[in-house]
Amino acid sequence: MNVCLKEHSENIVKVLDTADSSSLLFIGQKGSATYLDSQLCTESTFQWDLCSDVQRRLGACRKRRQNSCSVTDAVYLGVSGHYCLSTTNRALHFMRASPGAQWETFRLAELPTVPTCLASSFHSMNKDKNCQLFIGDHKGNIHILTFFYSSTMLFSRKYSLKTQIIRFIDLNLHESYVKWKTIAKVHSDLVNKLEYISPRNLLFSSSCLDVQKNLVSQDLHVSRMNIFHHPQGITCFDTSHQLDKIVSGSKDFLIRIWEIGCCSKAITMLFGHKAVIADVRFHSQGTVVSVCKEGEVRIWSLDSCECLQRFLVRLPTITFPCTFGNSTLHVVPHNDKRILITLKKVSMDLNTEECSKNEDAVIK
Image 1: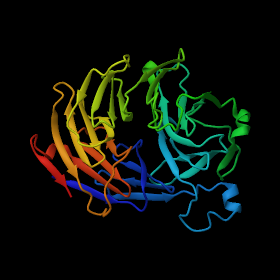
Image 2: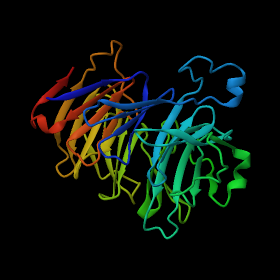
Image 3: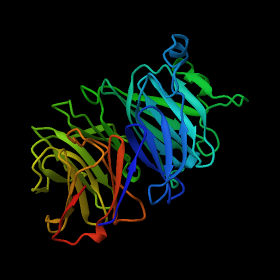
């Protein structure tokens, strides 16, 4: 099997698809942004200074690459040409995205809570043609930033070549460009992941530490909440508007398929993993890809509920025990034969077409 392997300078938090479909943007935990081509060869690398003014005055960011805060998530705001980073210093960083040149245009600082995960939406058929940024935080709240003129300007802009830093308490000065809304206490603990289905105006959120509300869907039109619950906890999930389904992983080693509109009971379960499910994604049409904490990757058929392919991943550059976690899997757009697997500082690109149906491939 042909496997592309890439080592990074720091732990990878998120892999983003950009406007150039042949390039992937890898976001590092300490602020690196690396563009890689289809062969995982580096096109360009940027290192962002994420320190706040207070941290800089205290001398916490004097050394190169020593951001005292960490990136918690990243999302691409395609219509605006920006991507957004959320960080532990209670800030959102809006970066102009281009493989040739990048700069931080805006920074929304001094948020009331720590942003932990992000999602975005832009629906061209929406009469308002606005862009929404969804933000989960460490207290279980979900915030919605609605940009009215995202294709031209995210916030009110002062003429300057420097990054414009906007304090949260001054956000009302930009009300003609952006609106902030908070949905309080959706979960009782940290929000791990957000996904939004634009045509149905449904927002999905998960919290691994919230025993009562592991996975929640909300209809933002009517403020109605549905809870997809499993007693052993939902560890990861993915949604598909085309299939009208949700796939979730759990601590009981099982994968469950749900109808989007029915949260009372899963319609089917997939058996085979022998460890906690770390991540799961809808893959090509009619298939699901999953990975457990021990690095076993499986591709499943939604029609037959059978395992079509199985890969056992052993990353050669990591000597400590591999424990796979959230955001491990990335399905490459426009190519349903590729699966990107990332663990800490190592990324691996697998071509599933080169592995036969009955082969158990050990990737070393």
